[in-house]
Image (cartoon, rainbow, N blue to C red):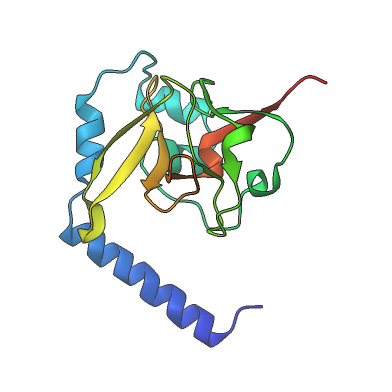
Length: 166
């Protein structure tokens, strides 16, 4: 149920995000635009291929609401792939419950995920993207479990899941 307090905070959050976006240019988007990827489509083709929500995350580096992805509770054996180009990205064996509200992994599959420095919103983070199509997946943090100590905090909208055959 929405209260005036929720609306006030939501409005303040939206205004803050708009202000931050105007003060800190989207340098990661500019960097991505200069890279050449194995799988490449025009903006119109991406829009036709993806849902509006997937397009916002994968192609415009948006973020889904925490706790909104059905993949948070996906615990079957299988592979998480890129929703943009179907490249396998993560094994379910490396998925863990981070408590953040997004699917999290401690290691990607070999030659699947690339990273770049993201300086948007006045902070420095490591952005993770599909190495084949450049689709934005999320961010990598140094607070994950052993053996890597990394947390690949991924947007569920950027992923697909294929269960392992029994």
